[in-house]
Image (tube, rainbow, N blue to C red):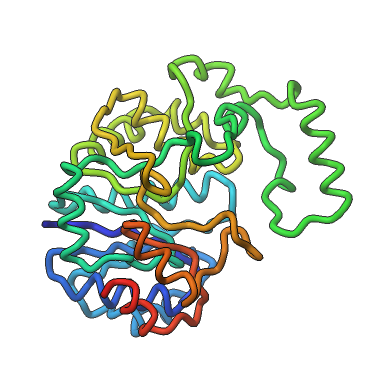
Amino acid sequence: MKKIFCITCHKISNALSITVEYLSSFSENTILIHVDKKSKIEGFYNLLHFNKDNVVFIPDRIDVTWGTYSQIQASLNLFNKALEYDFDYLFLLSGDDIPCMSNEQINVQLNTIGFYNLIHYQDGRNSFVDPISRVKYVYPDFFFLRNIGIKHRLYKRLFFLLKFLFVSKSFKRNGDKIDGYFKGTNWFGLNRETTIAMMLFINNNEWYRELYYKSCCADEVIFHTAIKHLGREDIFHDENYINDALRYIDWVSGPEYPKILNEEDVDKIKKSNCIFARKFPHDIASELFYKIIE
């Protein structure tokens, strides 16, 4: 089975190295990596086997700022590169993800679900967030600061009180061209047919991309909405799983949110029947990875 793993990252970590090392050991897999333009890419080459034919660092790199359209553009660049390859299935990963299954088990799982798309749409398993609010307004730059003080907290409150003044021109012009907006996890898996249809729609409709230029955290909206707009029905759904993307992420236990996973989580990860898990500490040992997939 030909699989493409699109990875977006900004730093070298053991999790990234383990994932690339393992997945690239199978010739049927292709690994495409987007390294944040702020990062020096040279250090990635030796660590991540730049000499392997099936490990590719995409040249069209984006200076990524959390929560902004730059996150979306980095993913679009990966997907456009993926379309240059013949593949059956595509996964979008972060540099903090590792597989929870062996390569063979991943293939079996994809066959079992009939190659349905593993993309989670928010439901009763998670708190609801209005996707329209992510897209409708022009968000000021202070929304994208990771560490904010009292001043910017006050600015945020003021923004939400006066948000009717910040409706984007793009949304006013074209917001109603979409029947509805949808949100879910920003890490997902798509079959080839859905990937092609989604990218044709996004690439050929500048008005759709413009809707998200001044959005906030809309990497959790743009792809989900496009897929629904296209009427794709081959979407996996089973509420017995932690989510429909089959990604193990612990938003409950803490102390970090999501939790930084460790050895005490191995049994829960294995029992989840998820394909990938995140986040892991940057110095995760390879022994822990092999405990998970054994």
